Length: 174
Image (cartoon, rainbow, N blue to C red; front, side, top):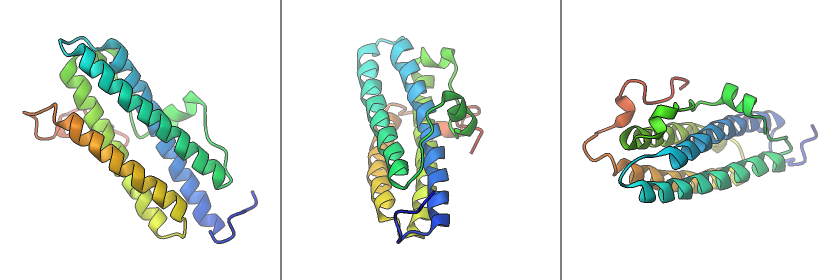
């Protein structure tokens, strides 16, 4: 691949692309998890959760598009195969039984958002060491938005200090 962004080192671009592809894999699995919760939740707050998860998965779809297009702008193809997302994802698929109950569903969203922010922050720190200001700016904006979603979903778990410390909650692929 020819490096059309001459001010960036090809080695740095290769590493940034790998990190973007990993983020994309995790975001695709998170998106599927959110759709499962959106469709299958059974609770007196169904309409609220249904609407809020739709807003979040719409945002996740937008982020996926932004990051995939950033990889293209850097000169790389973006992965689109579900089988590859599952292999490369740092987010695990949730089970169908989790999607129907409110607290496990919200805990899953909180844990997935924590995992995404952790991975995205590591990627952002790496990008700091390069001159890729475009990717840095994109990640900054996304991180701020995901932090807000994390705060809002975590507030639904008022009696739980950190659901990610519960066994089986967070991804085991950290």
